[in-house]
Structures are given as C-alpha cells and as structure tokens.
Length: 428
Image (cartoon, rainbow, N blue to C red; front, side):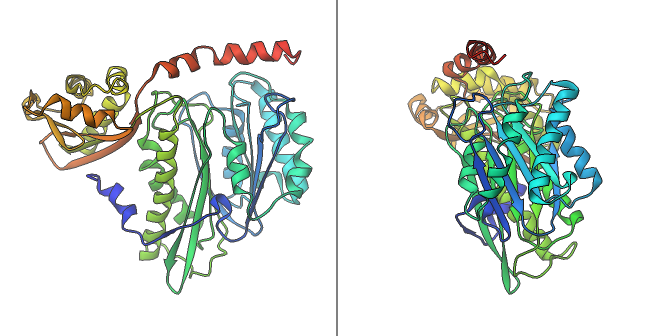
C-alpha cells in the first residue's frame, strides 16, 4: 500500500482467532428474536454484549446533524463516565427521527438491560439500525431482555453479529491475539453496514472489545486513530447515516502488562486496534447493498494530505466512475474528471492513472496499454486504482465499490415497502 498509516497495521505481529466480540477475556454475548420489524419473524434481532468486570470505554458517532435517539443517549452516558459495561442493540428499527418518544424508548432499552445485569443505566450503551422514522416497538424488546441476559455466553458473538444485520448478506466478525510483553492481549469485534456508507463514518454499527490493560485516555487516542484510518476511509453511496456508532470496551483482563501512556506497547495496541477496524471496514464495503466490485483507491504524491484525501474521495464517490466499474469499463477519463473537480491542487499534465498496476494514463494522456488488458482488471471482483499526482509526498487510501442497477432497485422502495407491510399486518 502507499499510505503509511495503512501499512502500520501490517507490521503488528498477531494471530487471527475465532470468537469475534467475545474473543477477549471476560466478555459474553447473546442474541434473541424480539420481532422488532415483524412480530412474526424468527430472525435474531436483539443483541447484548457484556463485560463481566469494570471497563473503560470510548466511542465515535455519526457526524450527521440528525442523530438517532440511541446515539444521543450513548453520548450522554459517555459524558457521565467511561465505565461502560454493556451494549444492547437491535436491528429492524433505527429509532431515528422519533422525537422525545424515541429517547424514552432508548432509555427503556438501557434501563431494562441495567436492571437485569445489576448495573446502572448509564453503564449501558444502546445501538439501533433499520428503517428511519418509525416508532420503536420497545415493549417487544423489553419483554425479551430477561432471556437475553440469561443466555449470555462466551461464545455468543456469532449470534450477536447476526442480530445486528439489516440488508447485510453475511455477518461481519474479526478477532486477533497480539503478543505483548510476557503475555498477550486480544481484540475482537462485530459490525454491520450495507447501505448509506460514507466517510465520517459509514452507515454502520461496530462493537469492539479488548482485554488489554490501558487507561481511558490511551483508549480514546487509539480509537480516534483507528476510526480515522478505517471507517472514515470507506464509501459506497456517499450518504452518512443517522445511527453510525463505533463502541470499544476494554476490561483489562489480559495477562499482558498494563499499557503505559506513550509507550511502545501503546503504539502496538493502536496498530492492532486499527487492524481490527480496517478488516471490519473492508467487510462492510465488500457486502454493500447489491455491489459487485470492491475497489481500493490509492492517491499518491499529492501536495498535502488534504489534497490526497479530496482526490481519493471525489473518485470514490463519483456516480459515473462507479457505474463504469460496474460495467467493467476502465474509463480513466471519468477518473481524471473527478480528480479535476475534487478541489485539490493538481496539474493535469502530471497526473498518472493506473488500473491494477497497468498504466492507463500518463501525464493526463492516454497510453498504449491494450484496452483488453485494462478490462481484465476491472472485470475482477476486487481491484485497485492508483492516481499519482506527482506533486508532493502525501498519500491517501479509500475503499469503495461499484454502483449497480440492483442497488437502485433495492433502495427505490425500501421505506414504502416497510410501511405497506406494517399496515397490511395492522401494526401501523
């Protein structure tokens, strides 16, 4: 890769392990069917993740000015202290744009979990994902919290990962063990996200746990670094959701020594956390709503980091570019036109564009690379596009996808179909 920050996670010695969000010591999880979207459905849609010992927590939320009720509640709970012990999350309803009633419903979820776990309400984080603008059937959720708590296990991660899915086609889970001192620590997580994916962050829920011993301030620093170089580097459709949430909980149960501020171990943890976040972020892009291509946009040799970012995001978000990829068309002209309107400082006569390492444009002009060879690259389900601005030393990477007819069809009637279904069942 061409981005030094992206390379950092590859230098960490780690072992990929099973367990997801319960891979770290002292964490349990479970999921049940609550019928949030449809009381007749049998799919898992309510998850709970718990640390069995005191923990520190940090989180990052959507930058959208319209924030869902659970996001607002989580922000309040973090202000009250970092000793967060549990996360309760549902799919099927976003509890967004639901007014004061939505806040009360989010509080009811937190209160219900706290009572059953013997914790304080402020120690519970809440996540919701699904259709915006619909009242949460919170009574179906609170009625299931008892069985949700009773079924908590150290191997409940897969159930929790399945329960937070919406239009995802597969669960997203990743965990690693990292040697540290005379011991090791573990980091694992689950995520969901399929549509409304855009930097700052993406439409997504991501819950990560670790047993590393570190302070709240050091966790805060690592979380911000990790999110900036993972979830803030992905885009599918250019939309930023109302519910985006990344929560990281650390309970210090690892047999590795405590991580001191500013130490080599602190850098190690930061890189390891970034690795987990980046893998989950890539899974989200690869499972975007009806996408067929996973594309890595590499911008190199820009004047500044901001210029590199502007170019990468302009290309990654361009509807024309994304449609050309879907049609397996290596149209470098669409790429360079996005570079031109990105707002970055560029010189057209210096821009080089590569598809999968093959030079398609040199100095802003077409090359002699056979079209058939370029087409082979963009026909693949995964490929990279490199844009060399030849103006400096700054680099940036963004992960994106194509845009398909099926994506348009799926999103053309999602809300209408949901409302119609509720009315047919007499639920509205």
